[in-house]
Length: 190
Image (tube, rainbow, N blue to C red; front, side, top):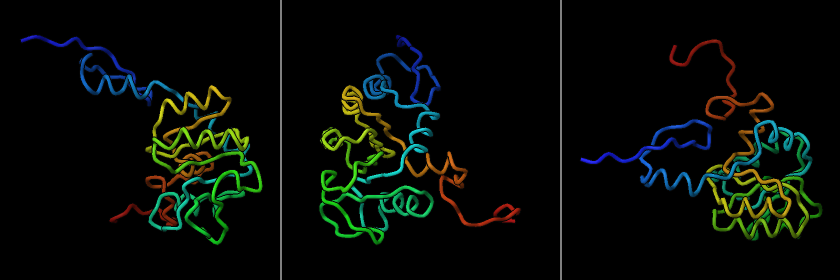
C-alpha cells in the first residue's frame, strides 16, 4: 500500500487543509482559485464611493437573483441603478438598456449576472464604456477574465454578492443574508 504525498492547500477563504498532492480537488483549487480580489476593506471602500451601478444580466423574473439584488439595491441604497438586458423593456419600474454602451452615464460599478464564459466579453464592454469596477456575482468564477481585467486597469470583484456585501457593511445582514423584517427577542420555536 503506497501513501500519497500530502501537501497543505490554502483555500480562497484563507483556511488551509492537507490534501493528497495529486488529488483532483488539489489540482482544481490550484488551477482555478489562485487569483485574489480586493480585501473586505477595499470592497467596502468600492461600495461607499460608488454612486451608480449597472446590473448586466438583470432579469424581470422575480425568481432570479438579479431581480432580488436589484430590489434590495433600489430599496436599501442610494445608488442610481441601470438595468442591462437586451430582452427586457422594464425592470422594477425602470427602463432597461440593451447594452452598457446605451447607458446615459458611465457606471461606477458594473454588477454582472452572466455565465462565467461570458465574463471576458463583459469586461471588454466595461473597458469600452470606461467603467472602473466589475463586480461578478456570487457563484460566477472566471480567473482568466479577472486577471485580464486587472491588467487593463479594472478593479475586479468576483464570486461575491453585492447585496450581501452592501448589507454586511451597512448593518443590514440578517439570517443567511436576508432581512427577515422581524424584530423579536424570542428565539424561533419558543
